[in-house]
Length: 384
Image (tube, rainbow, N blue to C red; front, side, top):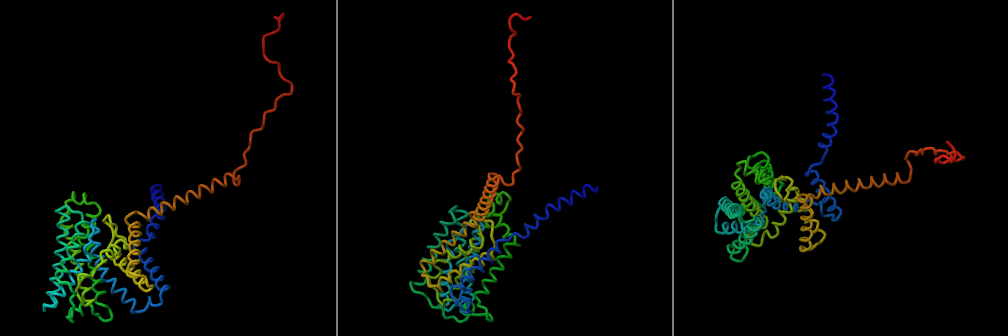
């Protein structure tokens, strides 16, 4: 009995350092927080206006729209898909809201019709991906063009000014000293994080992105969940469009250009893998804040919009390499190989110089007699 207890205690002692290392291992959100702090430090050192209250409010309000679109993109990307139409659907939402408000519709019917129209666009995306077997990239690329074209036709070529005070107060006003756009983004993030972690649909979406064939063989409703992911993405894109309409006080088909790129950047910078099955909405929102701060720093420095696109593209490539391309593992493996090679070369150098090696004791040479012994041969003649 005592021998068994001794073995168990020894095993526990050996496993304790490994458990401590696992607990101390930083997670992806810690890396994001460090990057967030580093970008903020760069911004403060670059411009004295970075930490002014007005500039911080601009960053947070602009990042709120990207955060909602990033959550929409995350829900699709986690299923191994992609949605390139979120920016165009947001533009369509601004135009629908502006047209309905100009015709005298109420705020609540306007919001419902705009959101339902955008959810219908997402439904079309999901049906084409699931049942028509068209790849998500091609499907959403086509919807990006269709939605923006429909928005241009609805607005009849000119932007529509929104003057409804209740609508502007709801999406562009303040709750206390906090902008309503920030409140909406926080609510969307918390609801999405709770749903992805605790609801059956969220767990099924992770399973679908991790291994679609295994999810199908397990009896999960793969087709229905995929369609629901695209419907949710369209719905959130419509909500982001309403936020843009309240902020810009107008509806236009030109609104939202480039937001599909920003939403993808927010998702991948937040650690969401393009191969699906990983990530979380809170990290996506942190990625949106990082993207927003980088854009704000470039504006403060005076960088034009075209070079900003180049920088954003490089940020996306770096983020995809580190999250989806196994870049972190490759860097760690390379550093370990470099360290092992240095250790081996150091040992070889020490052994070659003779320092630290034990003195070799050669065997004493054997001494031979000075008088040579006669060689053995036949006896001489005449002897018996």
